[in-house]
Image (cartoon, rainbow, N blue to C red; front, side, top):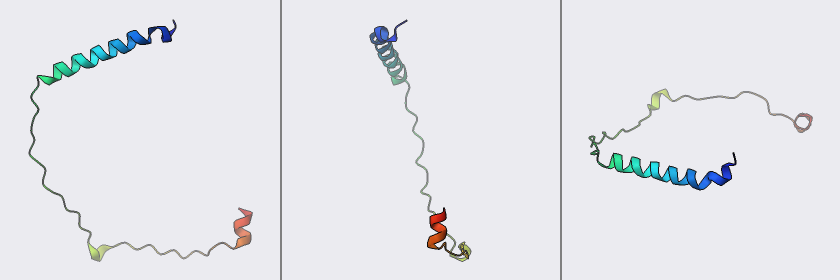
Length: 66
């Protein structure tokens, strides 16, 4: 079965299904939820994490070997 010959029918069927679902959901009233309260993110300055790196840097010869 060659799908290229049936692409028009597939497209029309997809448009019909999309149209039917848009009409079916248009009658349903949209629910209005209360707006969520604003959330403010604030970092605790006393508990800030610090990362210390104590490794040596590679020399030019070591970089070239990689």
